[in-house]
Amino acid sequence: MAAEQTNESNLLAPLAGEVIRIDHVPDPVFAQKMMGEGFGIQEPSSGEIVAPVSGEVTVTTSSKHALGIRTDDGLEVLLHLGIDTVELKGEPFDLESAKHDRVAAGQHLGSMDIDAVRDAGKDPTTIVVVTNSADRLDSLAVQGGRCHAGDVAAAATLRG
Figure 1 (cartoon, rainbow, N blue to C red):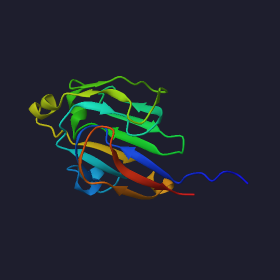
Figure 2 (figure 1 turned 90 degrees about the horizontal axis):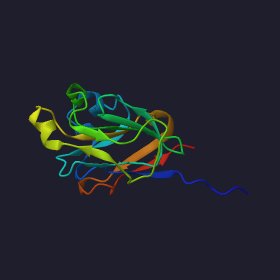
Figure 3 (figure 1 turned 135 degrees about the vertical axis):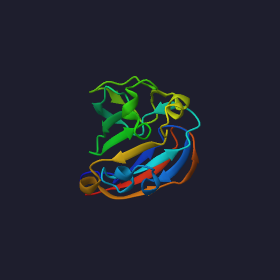
Figure 4 (figure 1 turned 90 degrees about the vertical axis):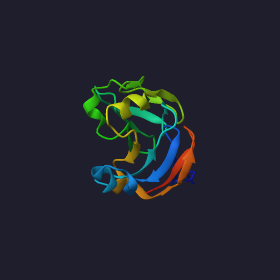
């Protein structure tokens, strides 16, 4: 008899701040779950960024505001630093991972200059979303409240 595979996976807070449900994120595309289920980190108190999950980096952007990671159990997780920050052309961000890198949950990925984001008139709320939620998630239980980078922010129950 084969060992039973776990159907739960934790998603970590990528930075310190206040964990909020995705429908409270101040961006309608994310709040309406058009990109999938997830959560936000509002009012970040530190710019240190850590990996929300373990897996392979599948997406990087020249603007350094977003990073995609595919977990070994098939979740496709997007880390999006701030709201409308693509317009900042990478200036306040320093992400150190490249496409095809393997990362571990909680591993340091880089930093975001929160003051520079705010000074540019942007919201530093950071979003973690499972872009293949419809295919891979049964549910996502978000843990609200203050958190440190690397704390469990949500528990995903996986399909099949």
